[in-house]
Amino acid sequence: MSALNDLAERLRAAGALTADEVLALRRQMWPDGRIGEDEADLLFALNDAAKDPSREWVDFFVEALTHHIVAQTEPRGYIDDAKAAWLSERIARDGKVESSAELELLVKVLESATAAPQGLKSFALAEIERAVLTGAGPTRCGGALEPGRVSEAEVNLLRRLIFAQAGDGPGAVSAAEAEALFRIKDASLGADNAAGWQQLFVQGVGNHLMAYASYEPLERDEAARLEAFMDDTSVRVGGFFSRVAGAAFSGAVFRGQSKVPAADHDAAVAAANAVTATENAWLKARIDADDALDPLEQALLDFLAAESGSADDPRQTP
Image 1 (cartoon, rainbow, N blue to C red):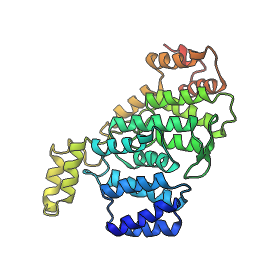
Image 2 (cartoon, helix red, strand yellow):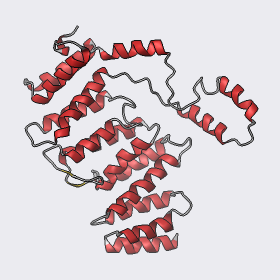
Image 3 (cartoon, rainbow, N blue to C red):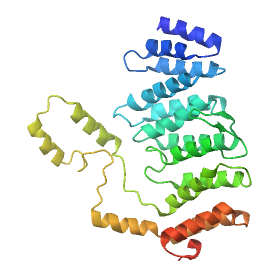
Image 4 (cartoon, one colour):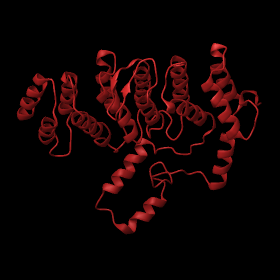
């Protein structure tokens, strides 16, 4: 670790991390395919010190910490409370997402994980919303955060977050995510927003109101039993089918497999496609909040009417 610390000190003092220096750091830190807790803390310290981080640095920072948080858990992909709390506290230490690397890390972690604690999902949504509304500077994947308007880079960031596998609504947009889209829309009305922003707003809120999602990840304990079984090299093939048929995995062999029969699934899809009275009330409250129907809200109503096969305003549907 002393050689790694020496290298890190030189990089911290320079305040810049070139491609060659990042490669040297990768070789020192990650020869065994694991990132330890001390190394993860060191990565954040280096990122804090980097005045002008290179693309290679951001890639390594995101890749290494995503592996530490998501892959180095048991069962794999299920972020535990301790790592979720560590990530939230480390990013929020100065009261904001400090860099594009941290912003990308939050989204990448939720994209890569199977499941995450609710607290981490809520934290990520709040931080991404704040970054979109007030942030400035380049992002990892091109484009920039621009306060006062929704840029194409921010559209891409939001889209990745609300449809992330371990996001607030896996397979569907949650109420919290739809409400965040409304807040961002209200804050950026009249701005020179990216062309893709209206489409994301309409599709995101429309998904919340009308989409059906049967996907549910296995419970953590269930996934741990499945992972232990798959890793047990002493198990004979002959015993595999009897164990699969048993109750140990509650009838689910593959993570997140839908257990809904086809007929019930079709009925559920049809039911979800209808905007309910409760959903109408939710939508009406947000549209009526400022006593005006803006162009994005009109586009949303047009989309809902088209998807439901009705020309009526969905807010008036009983």
